[in-house]
Image 1: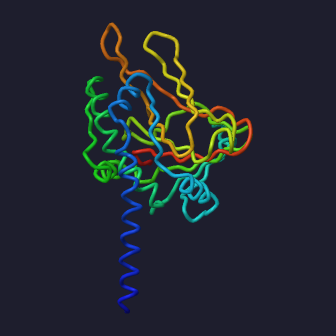
Image 2: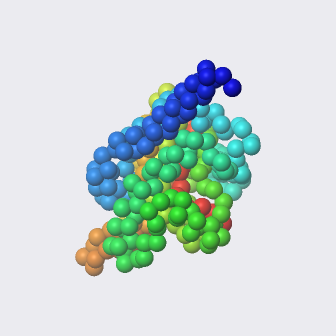
Image 3: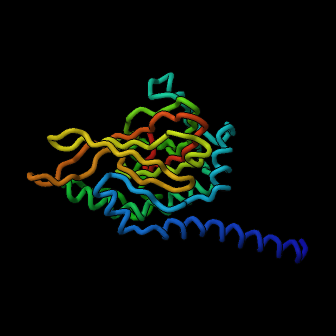
Length: 255
């Protein structure tokens, strides 16, 4: 093997490492104090740009590569709404894997605080890998990162992504298309059942490449009687025109 080839390989290695580190920098660049405050107030919060437009296009372009996915769900067939989504299989594309790894420890303090307020045991360890091992020992072994595709008229019914007893209380979605250019409509919806009160709805139009962190199942809400668990469901409003792809990062695996 020539020295030139070795240098090229070393250069390629450095380039890959630099690209990988970019995901850590982007996640670290969020104002996590502000994100925490907003999630505590509303159950969801926008994150800064986690993927570039080129990376968004690359991930959306994976949708038709059958070998990357373990299953496909037709939402209309199951009365989940209208549209389609696919669950990634292992090994994940590098951006999916890296963002999941980097986001988990940032969300962990929020998750632990929520369960402390609700008097529940917070069983999540410091690393995502350790937590997924706990999921696997409980029979939740199937990967859950998801790629969704919506066309004109498609929508997602209000639901919760619960795949077994092991649940991480926060998850993240990233819009891979540009609102107002690639699609109209398609707002992210969050509906929270307040204790002894009417439900509260929140609609967010997620910019291309930005993340939205939101409640998976329930979250603590302070009332006169102390902290109560407010059930939360999420969905997507009807896409009026165009096409919308979304990357969903769930931090627990499925049975």
